[in-house]
Length: 349
Image (cartoon, rainbow, N blue to C red; front, side, top):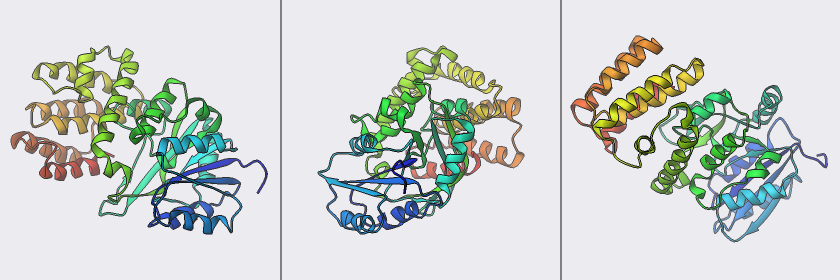
């Protein structure tokens, strides 16, 4: 290994013994080898540190620190300050990187001159085996950010120099990645995603997104609102309507024409990938408001017909699902809705 690693791999660990071995080995077995692997054990009470030390004893690329528990954001900030690489590559304690992940991302970054690069992910660990896709182009990623996080955090490569200017927010650490992407977009980062899965993303009940779901959702909506207010020059919406979109206040029937007009403006975007992003998220939104707004299906058909000309089978399936949700008043917090959620998750890719 050279004295100046090109990549610094950042992995916070807290009580991760169950899956840690697979994650560490997926990094050590990368086809690109010029990296340092910084692991901070964040006060684990299981055998995580013992597992980490076993690998560190045989591979000088590992830099291991153990101390009392803090949180993910503080741990990541410590790693940033310790790192020597031009790029910081994120990795989580329970996921698995494909062997050529680093090679592919470095090549992609060279070709795009981006400041951050993520990839698609393949879900595993439960019956849900979907491939989760993220937009490729900078403008499409920033459009996606209006609705949800546009990166799978553990897939990201970030330019260390730029990341060190922002750091992770340590206040709302359950949504520290979404907060960083919003601030990075405002700082002018060039953003991209490789259009293939480079990481197997494990789903299990102990991950942060499962344990802190409600708090994470609340924090994410706060961040989303901030981004909408910054991005709003394109749409000229009132703060009251933004509150509806980010679920800070309930939907009222008088809001519907304004929201329909917003969606029509979004779908006029001339960039095809941007239009794809808007249409997917509009469809998801229609599913959640269908129990309360009876003409959602006709509005979706209109947008689909004018702007999309989607495949007939997919379109008919979504139309039927929207009609059933509306007719039977199926709320988004119930079990039955989850069945319909699987439908649009499989169709809206």
